[in-house]
Image (cartoon, rainbow, N blue to C red; front, side):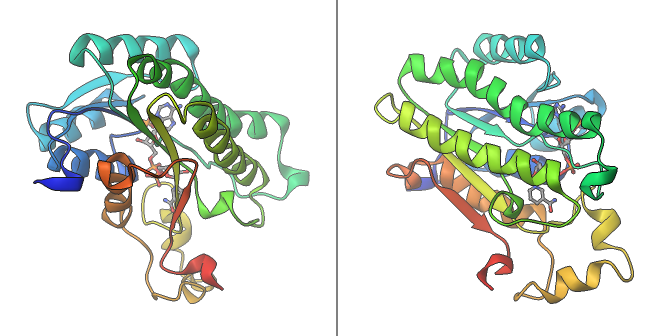
Length: 251
Ligand SMILES: NC(=O)c1ccc[n+]([C@@H]2O[C@H](COP(=O)([O-])OP(=O)(O)OC[C@H]3O[C@@H](n4cnc5c(N)ncnc54)[C@H](OP(=O)(O)O)[C@@H]3O)[C@@H](O)[C@H]2O)c1
C-alpha cells in the first residue's frame, strides 16, 4: 500500500481486539502495514486473532478499567515497538438494556468503568507516551449512542457521550503536540455485543427499518473508517466524531 493510507512500520495498539469491531480494525491496520499489539481480557481470542494476522501481531492481556493493567500495556507496547504511533480505544461493553429504574448503580458504574474510564486510562498512559514523542493518532470508539439518546441505554449513552467530549477536550489539549484524537461512532454492527438484539425475530425490525441502507453493519464496515482516522489521510482532523451507520442518524 502506498500514499495516504500506508501504515508501514507504524506501531499500533488496539484494545478489545480479539473479536468484533476491534478485530476488524486490527486486521485493517495490519493490512496497511502496521505492527499491531492486540489487547483485551481473554488471551485465547487475542491469540487466535494474532495468528490470523501473522507473526507481526502481538497480544497482551489487559483490562482497560484497571489502571495497573493499562500501565503494563503501555510498558509492553514500548518494550515491543519502542514507540506507539496509533492507539485504538475500542474495548467496550453494554451488558444491559433496562429502564433507569431497573438500572443499578453497580450497572451504571461497570459500564462507565470500561467505556469511559478505560478510554481515559489508555489516553492518559499510552496517549501520553505518544504526546511525549510528539506524534500519533488516537481513535476512540464512540457510537451513535454518543450522538442521540437511545431508550433503556442510559449508562451506555452516558459513557459514549463522555467519550465524545473526552475526545474533543484531549484533541484541543494535544493539538500542538502532534497527537490527533478522533472518535468513531458506528451504528448497529453485527457482533457479540449486539447479536441478541440484531438477530431477534421481532426486536431487530425497528432498528433495521430505521437504517436507510437496509442492513446492519459488519466489522469490516467500521475498519476502513478507523484506518482513515489513524492514517495520514486524516492529518488535519482532530476532535472529530466520524459517524458510520448506514444512514441511521441521517433521519
Ligand atoms: N456492535 C455495535 O453495534 C457497536 C455500535 C457502536 C459502537 N460499538 C462499540 O464498538 C466497540 C466494540 O464493540 P463490539 O461490537 O465489537 O463488541 P464485542 O464483540 O463484544 O467486543 C468487545 C471487545 O472489547 C473487549 N473488552 C470488553 N471489556 C474489556 C475490558 N474491560 N478490557 C479490555 N477489553 C475489554 C472484549 O474482549 P474481552 O471480553 O476478551 O476483554 C472484546 O474484544 C465497543 O466500544 C462498542 O461500544 C459497537
